[in-house]
Image (cartoon, rainbow, N blue to C red):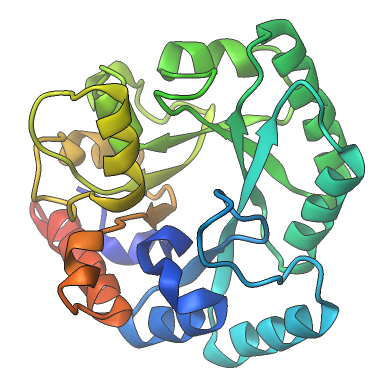
Length: 270
């Protein structure tokens, strides 16, 4: 198994969403993370959100906090491939990603036309290239790239695009870590969590994904194989656990639980 210290370990926004980006950075520092993932664009209309994309004063304060805490930014999210993309808004997210020294931009596919979707991804990669940013397509069962095969088809022949492998989506879309090649060059980073039980219906998958994942090592996913496939690749710990939040477990406590679970997993065979 790879050594824990060899990897960038990032605290994903969704793990501590109620905390907001400023407290997220402080929590990451207290718990031992090297990076955070920022959400300049909200994933849903109802989630807690801080306007760090549009407010330059907030951006300046957040950059200063990151520098002061010694925390990097692993990825920014979320941009979507659709049938009507606002490319000026997309450029603003690319600029934000570059401003924060981030190299990975999380992309979801919400365009039912696969040809247009791939063309949009190619344009996004072209716009991102001067900023040193890599668009990373994340397949999710409820999107238009619902599984690994579809995501591979989307990025095929798209220069500068990559894949993000989320352990949750890999499992809930019917694949496993054994379906991935060792050190697959198309994979830029991993999102780590766990889940247990048979694959439920799509509504339940969506609920699990956004609010009810397990910490690494608590479920059925073959995470040791996934990690062994990609030694040294950055890891984002994305473990929303509303059941714990609603029971009074704080954002910092949940972040530490995720970090400790990942460390135990990575050290298991050391």
